[in-house]
Structures are given as structure tokens and as C-alpha cells.
Length: 127
Image (tube, rainbow, N blue to C red; front, side, top):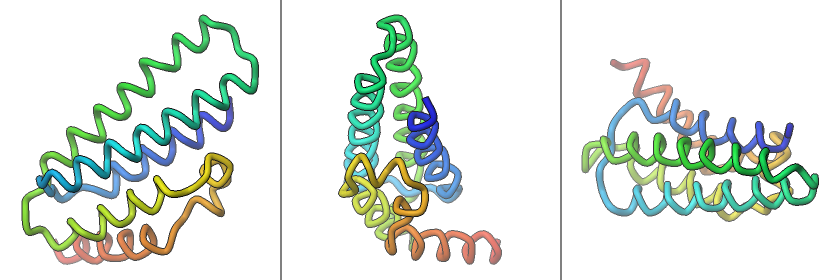
């Protein structure tokens, strides 16, 4: 179950880093791709751990809810926001990680996400 928490943490961290709203299709697609990757990795890990079908059934709605929450947040982002492309790049870089890399917080942090986080903090400090 700890690996599922890592995936959940990845989604939660990304949604918390998006306090400013962006709204183009590109960011929605990037968020959807990342959510699908997290869902796939989490369910594969659940299968490896040979968890009960009941536990698997509990996890699926939780993952769906996290994805829906993230997708609703990125849909609020104003077009033209300076964080738009860095956010897209961050999500795509995370989607490109292997499931194994996504389970390791040290390997999960990509250069694109570090850049995005820095820009997001600077934008928050200015507001």
C-alpha cells in the first residue's frame, strides 16, 4: 500500500502546485495522461501485492477521484498564464517515468517539475 500512497502523493503535490489557473486543452491532456499513468502503475502494484478484490475495488474510486480533482483544477487555469507550459512539461515528464521511478520519491522529481515548482513559488511570492 505504501507505493499507492506515493502515487497519491504525486497527484496531490501537483494539484497543490497549481494554485493559479490555466485552461487550454494541452494541459487537460497532460493531466489526463499523468492520471492514467498513475492509475496504471498503482493498479499494477496492487496486482503484484496480491491484494483482495475488495481492496482493489476500494482503490479504483479513490484513484478516479484524485484524477477528477486534478483535472478540474487544471481546467480552471487561465489561457496565457506563464505557468501553463511549465506545468504541461512537468506532467508530461512525470508521465514518461517508469512505474518503478514513480515509486521512488528521489527519482520522481524531474528537471521539468523542479523548474515548474520554482516558477510557481515565485509567482505565489509576487501575489
